[in-house]
Amino acid sequence: MNQTGVLTGISVSHASASIDEINAAGAESARGTVSDLLARPGVDEAFAIRTCNRSEAYVVTDRVAHGYDALESFAPDVRDGAIQRLAHEESLRHLMRVAAGLESLVIGEDQIIGQVRESFEAARAAGGIGPVLEDAITKAIHVGERARTETAINEGVVSLGSAAVDLADRRLDLADATALVVGAGEMGTLAARALDDTGVSQIHVANRTIPHAEYVAAEVDTDATAIALADLARVLPRADLLVTATGSPEPLVDPADLTDAGEMVCVDIARPRDVDPAVESVDAVTLYDIDALESVTSRTREQREAEARAVEEMIDEELDRLLESFKRRRADDAIASMYESADRVKARELEKALTKLDAQGGLTAEQRETVEALADALVGQLLAAPTKSLREAAGEDDLTTIQTAMQLFDPEFDAPPSDGAATGNGTQSPDAGGSHEGRSDGVHNEVSD
Image 1 (cartoon, rainbow, N blue to C red):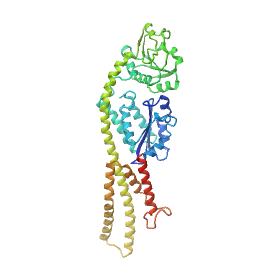
Image 2 (cartoon, rainbow, N blue to C red; image 1 turned 30 degrees about the vertical axis):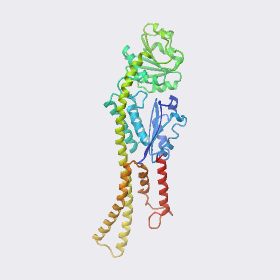
Image 3 (cartoon, one colour; image 1 turned 45 degrees about the vertical axis):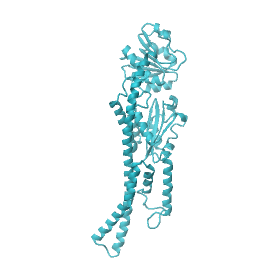
Image 4 (spheres, rainbow, N blue to C red; image 1 turned 90 degrees about the horizontal axis):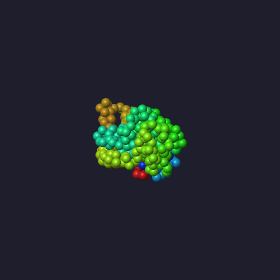
């Protein structure tokens, strides 16, 4: 497995994509996406994460350009403006931001870190996790944990959806209650997630497009069902809590729909309104609108944005550590490869020389030791300068030089050559050397893309 590969990522998320575009990216499951990517040429490792607000994939290849090629089919039907492509360092930073909740619809929300862990294990089960992704995702999870224990990034409510549930929880006993969420967009999804952390026993998700409602229902652990808007009147009388968040131009709920309802709290967070204000005339029905929630969310949003700056500093610090680790590994792997190659050549040529000297009259034990020491000294002195250069290249994050060295000092380069590939004495021909130069240029051009 490629120890010095580079990470390349692609993201389709709520930041610039619609729900349909997010759903269109990747396979139906994160594990399926990983399996698909591992089958592509040049992909050594793969990871994917899929939630209702994002679909992302990452691959490890020898060059960034190869990574972009492998990810080209991840979102073929998604408009380019909804796709974010990430090079090596950008991918590492983005993974940390995702796990810390900085890329979430609600800054600092807790659910995402569990989803990263689950996706990590799914990718491992599919054979997608190797040394690069192991370090990258482990570090991202570590950052996510630090963000939540060392800052207040996840305290308070910041979205209208979670604020609606928080308000209802103060006005109504939600233990064993039945909740009805109307709308499967961003706010409806957040409301369903917030309800999942309460004592409600049943969540109904109503939406004009049933598959979207099913997707949100599948996101929660509470018993949840998806229904069509046409069935709203049938479910309304059985609901203890109603949260509405659609884009309908006309109200979806009027007083007649609630005449048979018992005690109910309605929280309408839609603009324009989903619930006719006249429902307040219905006995036992309490209605709250978006204005009642905005003061709550604005305070916690400001608080979380301040904490987010502290998390950003944390990410900068942890990213520097991770990049240093990758640099050391790249240098160590290249140097190990170089010495392994040299030792194989030394052993082979030393054996030839000793055999010839034995045939010419033999060697004493002391003479044999002198010849072997000479061979060791030559290898050490010849490789001293390139060793120093590789360590400097790692320190400067010069991946081109390191990858070129890995190719030039391939431990298998002195394997039995094919016809015409080597000269009779076992050294490479000028043509073979020329092919290395061509590959070096390729590495330089593609890594710099």
